[in-house]
Image: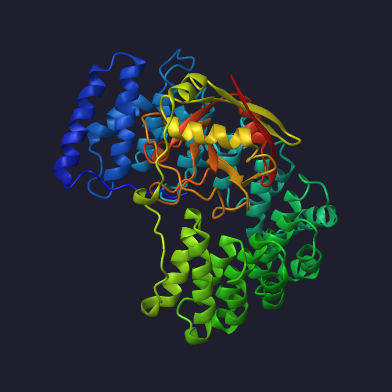
Length: 520
């Protein structure tokens, strides 16, 4: 995914004019809908124009009023408060009273934002921030506990305790943070116990603790991690080998990285090893990088080409780079664009032109027509996504908002395209992403899709199409785990989770899409 937006404000006077309009509207906003429009305006203005001019005292006062729950409010207008608080957070203008109010809000997302504010590095460390974060660790909502945990970076006791949390995402975050707790015997012992329990795992959903613990232990207690690394580098589960590559990078273990980059069967493992090997050995490992240019996975080819960029012996690598580029061009897949671009950059000014080289842009996206019959059939469709070993969740598909996207998604789902694919990218309190035949960012459906950007916001449960540039969707989907206003009007939203958001929240890295059924 990429986030790219050009500011529509040219100078401070433009920002001031927009701000005055929003402050004026705040005073007259009588309904939740009115306040929502103003809060959206403030969130967008502060984010886009923060480098041009900070908000005035009047704007901060208006945002504070919108962000504070009125006495007796049972939850109406929660999205107003989220957006207004986000604007204050962006502006570094959350005062103590507003922080306390947000930390006790009835809405979990507002409380989660309070944790973000309390942990903000630019805030002074006072009693109120510590109090908010301590309370957040006991919150009923996992998203709040996770954000509070992120704010307790130096509290190794609290981090260690969180490894016993009832939510797996909080647990894995805790293991990640134990990397900084090498001086704590309890922290190191917990990491080692997770490794011992996970050394022989063979269940699809049982490897995560050990994988995260291994990388953390490599930072916290390198000698102990090095002793167990070979077990994970030879695991039958490719994700454990990928995490082993990350641990080897932390340890500076060149031999393990060369082995994984040269001999592993999975291109995701090779990608992780190549990137780490490039940092550790530089162009001394060019022979390994050259060998990976013949791999079928675009992620491995891209990583190898990037590692070869600037090589002092580029002439020796040029035939392999040119052969890889020719192969990808003749293959004709839009979504090999990133690998092709990396090869062309590695070749530099001396790159040989390959006839038929394609650049990802709207000009090359095939047109798609929608017939009246298809529109009638998809007038109000739903999709049911079954996740192996987890459960199902239902989507409402937005045919009127994103007809071409819905049509392609339905076609792929009904053809069985998604069956057996995974959610490969899990970013708690942000998004989950999946639907890649290669279980990574760079392998998807070969033909790019057009963006269909609309006014539907990226709220919790919104379902979008992942891209790496304009009109570069390759049928990978993502689900917003929280409101993500910075994604609004950039990524296509073609659906919204109707039921089963609790299932979405439980999805872990590598969980398999059993099937997707389109319901009338």
